[in-house]
Amino acid sequence: MTTDRHPEHPDITSPMWSKIDAVISAHQGIPGSVITVLRECQDIVGYLPVELIDYIGGGLNLSRSEVFGVASFYALFSMQPKGRHTVKVCMGTACYVKGIKEVIGRIENHYQVSPGGTCADRRFSLEAVRCLGACGLAPVLVVGADTYGDVKADKIVQILDKYE
Image (tube, rainbow, N blue to C red):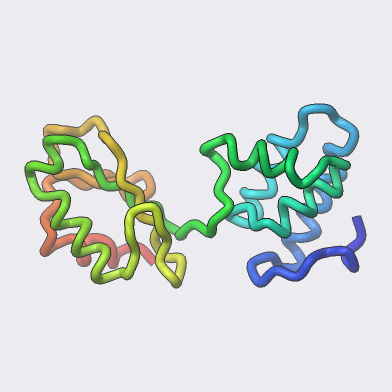
């Protein structure tokens, strides 16, 4: 792959393209390698923009629809930018009854992000999940690997402001 063929994309720097080229080169001609290439390229960029999906397809001699089909089928792939921190809020019965809806409302208003979305500054991605398996801590949320229990709406901004 030559660098003069790289599509323009504001989220993909020249050093990233070099790493992407190395990943594609290492897997060219290997049947079934598209999942590995997509995963490694997503690790480099943070998500899979359409331009990158097209570029991977060209590098692996696959059609756009083949690469897109794999990327859209597996939940581990994202074609939308993700935040530096993923906030998972539990929507299970115990958390709902104990006020998680108010916590989510505070997050939405303060950080301008809705469940399933990412803040404009890409600081947080907000996910509403069915259960986090910590009902005794309700209401509960997880930021990255950190779990917070008995979360109150008036304290959520203070908790999230620890994360840059």
